[in-house]
Image (tube, rainbow, N blue to C red; front, side, top):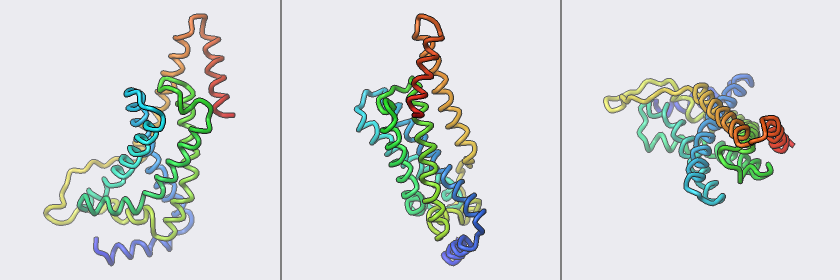
Length: 226
């Protein structure tokens, strides 16, 4: 894609109706949210397994959130024939503000929810807190992405490359096409699975029957939501 074509695609974004901008902003936000969720969960798993302190675990999770977020956004650009350096340059300009907003809001919400930061991976409070924090992060980052798209920035910088055919003899690559919907479904399934395992652990670790354990789970969920 030439510079003229790329600039033309930016002009086209300015002419989109509000419905188009809203859909594109929602898609861009979901895409960033998926990378953030993968990175954060991976960081928490590593931090918990290695016995790292909360600040170190949070720093690792945030770093991995950026790594996975930038990596997912780079795939369609690499498939379109951009070099790694050029793709990363576009993605850094497009996604940094969105991912940064998500990480600040997500960690702030997790810090506010009682016990969420110190809860282990096999803990109802952790998974409910993660679901709440990621949901709040989505609604915080959505207007950011919408604002950027309206001005031809953010994901507007990458949109022109999506679905483009690779050109040039060195541009043919076997880059996987991963749909945002499939990624989101995977993350949701993983988080629901973690919640189910946590509930099962609560039930199994209580020796005097399931009623008391279920009451404890309900109390923990209520604490997260209050």
